[in-house]
Image 1 (spheres, rainbow, N blue to C red):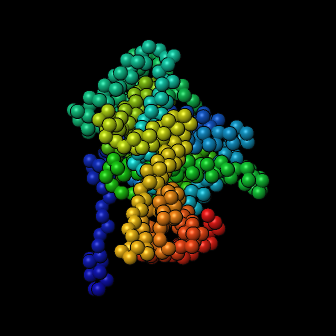
Image 2 (cartoon, rainbow, N blue to C red; image 1 turned 120 degrees about the vertical axis):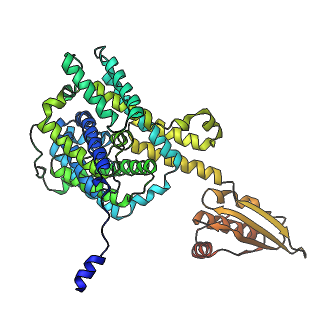
Image 3 (cartoon, one colour; image 1 turned 90 degrees about the vertical axis):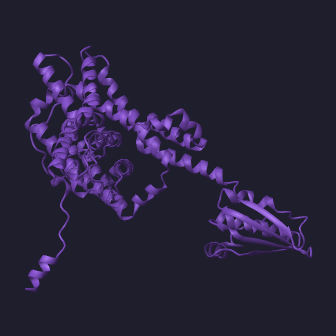
Length: 499
């Protein structure tokens, strides 16, 4: 009886949102649209990496399916990416596919290790201006990647792109029951096939696979020499992949106004790369373009769309390869143009915004964009943006330390009051704000309104004390808070200051 009552009283697990018919339809259609958009991208990235198109397509399938289960950010799409392709291209060219796959597996293991070490927590140190630069650079790169598909092509490509753009802009104003990108792809495919128009198609991008991916190990010597060879590439895969994935996850968090586990996303990316390697894929990470198609253009919000994107991709390229091959590239180019336009933060470059925005914020955003466009690597752009923000912040706060003083009524003691945060940048100006010659024999430095952060600050206080001592005067430092007192006590007089 008690077991029956406990079963009745046991709280029920919440019902998955995708079981709702409306949500299920949205997720299924979104997954189909993303799968269609993944095909030319995966083929292009395979060519960029110097491997067979099948390697990129299989990687996109295994990444999407695995991350749907293991990842921390629902509705985010992970697949073969250009950033990872750039990292592994030299290895593939010099040593072949098996060494590339071994590097992918090791890179996934490094990502899991970084997740355990809490690397995802570093995301909070990325300023908003870097995020804006990341998004804007990404939108420009997405648009730029479509330009080659619009050059040297039959003139009919341009009206087809225009029609697809018109469908995607106009249809959502009438109904959102069906994703506009899917309608555009279907309409253009039917028209070009029915009329017999000769325009570039998906099939022109490369051969599609006709079999399922097989599980296996890379055929490489399992030696220290091999490990030494692939380790730098594996580390590159891990760092670039994590940075792009975590940045994309944060962007989707903001768009959907929902939180996600960045730590789970980190080790989920690692697991996905390991699985991808064992199935002969080239590895990857989160794809901002396809994620925007899934989240913004199609309205997906759950893991089902990510999972189905991978499943549909495999079905499309293996079972329906002949159908997919006739999809005009004009349709997919139009989809990506809409994604690029909607991804760009137009508010950030509005004249009114630029007038109000602090100069340093704009510099950081532009540095991120310029570096990303110059290197075609979002990770390098983010690193440069963060470093630029750090330099500007350090310059801004370097002069925020204020020192005031009063003379004791008896004239025998000068009391200095320090206000501000003391660290390597701001403490440099501290030494010059004391009157070593004119002060009386006793000096008191009141640190009530200051905080000591590093050894540079302790060295500056030592230099002040040393200068007064050289003139036969004594200095007393008072009212250090607990943290400041701890670092001052540990380092004072031990830093070799000899002014």
